[in-house]
Image 1 (spheres, helix red, strand yellow):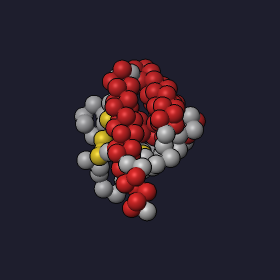
Image 2 (cartoon, one colour; image 1 turned 60 degrees about the vertical axis):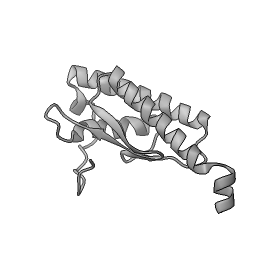
Image 3 (cartoon, one colour; image 1 turned 30 degrees about the horizontal axis):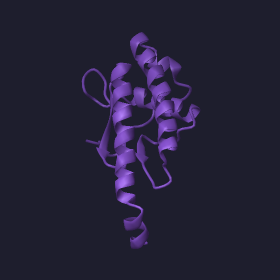
Image 4 (cartoon, one colour; image 1 turned 90 degrees about the vertical axis):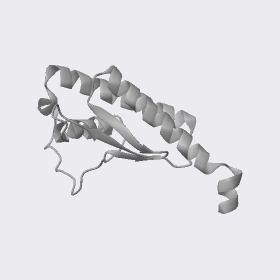
Length: 130
């Protein structure tokens, strides 16, 4: 296992793909004016959602999770990159997340976040992510 990891530069691959996803997500969030940020280290990241007071926005996160599922991106608000995540796969995920963030931007602009939810708002985490 160690030989495979070293020979294939797995750690560098994981970090590169995670950083690519983080940069693209944050650029899309900025482009569409969505109060969210991808944070983390290398291949492990989480998506944070804040309201105008800086508190966690559970309605916005709920809409994000709903729209991600519709786009075929299954997440609980985190992303963990693995060795199978090729450039093509990461690019596809970036495109899908861009479409999700575009919808969230429209919902934020028109103040329709809760109206677009097809289910209840998610419950808070037992401990906040920082």
